[in-house]
Amino acid sequence: MVKVVVDERGQPTDIEASPRLPQGLRDFVEARARDLAFEPAVIEGRPLGGVTYVVFGVCAVPAAGDQMHLAAEYRSHGPGLADGSAYPAPPRYPVEAARRGLSASMTVNYTVQPDGSASLDSVEFADSTRERNRAPFERMAREWVAGMQALPEQVDGRAITTRVSTPVTLEVANTGSRKAREMLKNMQDSRTGSAECVAAEQGQAGGQIVTAQSAFAIRDAG
Image: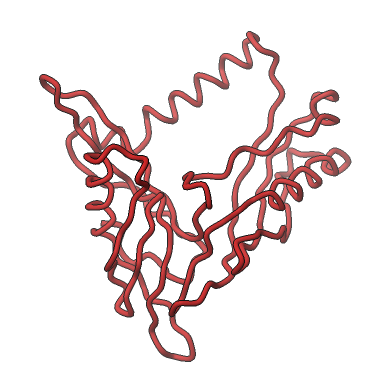
């Protein structure tokens, strides 16, 4: 996650990656963030600057000797997380649903408030999740969102509300089972096959633009 200050033209003017990153990686990500261009926030017809938080996917691939190919791909932007993480910690699987072997696929829609708290707006379930099985997952979503602590976006020096949508899929798989092994492999494949890792292997950058529900629309992801 990178904090980006945007001016009234939509250009990044001040960029701050996490100080927990190694200096070389921090410099690389901050340089990548400077390639971004946004549409400024518009209030009463006037373009305004502010603050947003950008998430990059980063991959390092070994090269000749002790060198590394690095690539950073824009993923999304909007409110940040107070602990500096790129994404919220996964929600806790509802005990009742786990005991019954229930799974769910949903999109959790919530609003980050100016004080950094979050409130649930709605839960949109996939058709594959039966209506009669949704109640424990709705409670889970409400508790999950209520526990979030965010860094709100700012426009013209004032914190604002921002709507966020997060897809969530929960499945039950016994440790060591074939299903558990398949789930683990899919997670690993999704990382090594990501746009940033492909770009790093090829020594180039590029990727898919993801539109976030932010006051600052992305114009160019670099």
